[in-house]
Length: 309
Image (cartoon, rainbow, N blue to C red):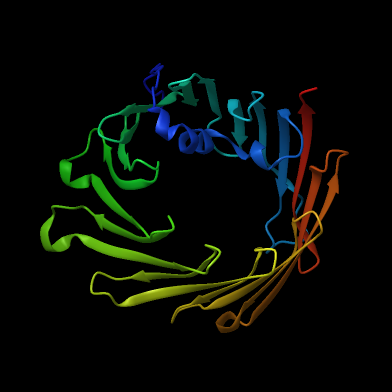
């Protein structure tokens, strides 16, 4: 089916007090690379661990281009079984504003994003084709933290009752840590609406150590417990629920990359050991990553970096 095509450009002006927070949000994963990266090409292969003799299949090919500040200016992603995704962006920093010009296109569907000043900072995201449309509005406080979002999904030719709506309310502690997210599905629908609350707690270093999901009547549905080493690296996660509890341990190399995962699922009587190996370039960025599960290679990714001189 051929979707209607849309083309949309926008300019966003952000008050100067929010520049630091917003620029950080716009910077991509390039901030974790070593050296000023101008281009990253990646190819991912994967195998279903249930079929260890099956071949590795191409999962994703992507090319990302960055400006000298680390902001993504072009993204081209091809996922197996999905429409290609292409994004063009330009980040311009001035004394009083951050100007971000973007055009996103996924297949024949263009996604819109507008950011502008109202009382604080607001983002509006829209996507639409002949069958489906999506709308999301987000509000931020003066520190650039999200405090509210409202999203609506509808099928264009369907009845109103087939649409879905979700509201999220965010709460922070005095250290700026997110401590509560209250979600309401289909607000305004009376007794049928679904309300859930996620609560988080942290240690003195602002590492998240506990997460809990509560039902509308405050009955706990599940808990996550997190442990860290002296380098503030996550080393253990425990998931507690009545259905399928599990634990996962993580081990790191000197570069700070995960090299081993041990997962135990007692109800399923599963003990899973994942081993990850890397090859690095002269800048210290990994260019080959291979992951095995209980001795079977399940994932392989190659990366090629180009750097600013």
